[in-house]
Image (cartoon, rainbow, N blue to C red):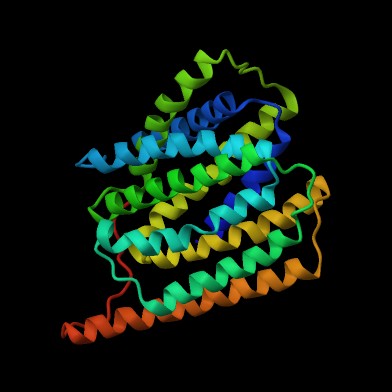
Length: 294
């Protein structure tokens, strides 16, 4: 989860720096990343998912998320996009019991609120950023919904036995089938050479592999806890944005970072304690992280 979070945070800066439009950039990213995973899966003879319903659903949601993520990042400040993304733990907590059958401890929900408060402090220091726009903010809200749908579908697929490698390859190829027609219908340019080409490859293989790591982690941590860990993305992204684009970063950002870090650690402890109590009530030993193939 730490590696995935770091990779995701770097993706915002790379996307903002690239001149390609949303469809073309998303298609390049998914084509390179998905193609590399398919080749790796074939070489390793990794098994493919037995059921395709959740992987395909995750792919459709992921494709929509990719388009909205790029549109939002290019049209508003990175801080605003990442703030709205940090609301995901609250959204997951509200729906994970119905969609995944997971009971979210109140302490974890409280930690999610604390994390959002920390991120809000960070974003409050960026409200005067001239790159903000209402259209971009609306894209960021829609992106939050699309990413949450992808997150829950992917976790459901992992919980039902879909291997990490081939699940990620599957939903990336499905997502490519979503974004490619969008780019072609809009007549977007796919031209990318030199430095921009290298940046696209880096975007596909570094932040893109964050999804591989996230899918590997799904059976080992709850949906509430893993989504809470992703609340650190805005704080890391704010650092990269300050270095790359000169966006503000000062004492309020440090305060927000400390609050989010505390929320993640407290949430991890609360989640582990709740799992232990449920196991004790059921008369079973406390569960150890699953080590599934792939």
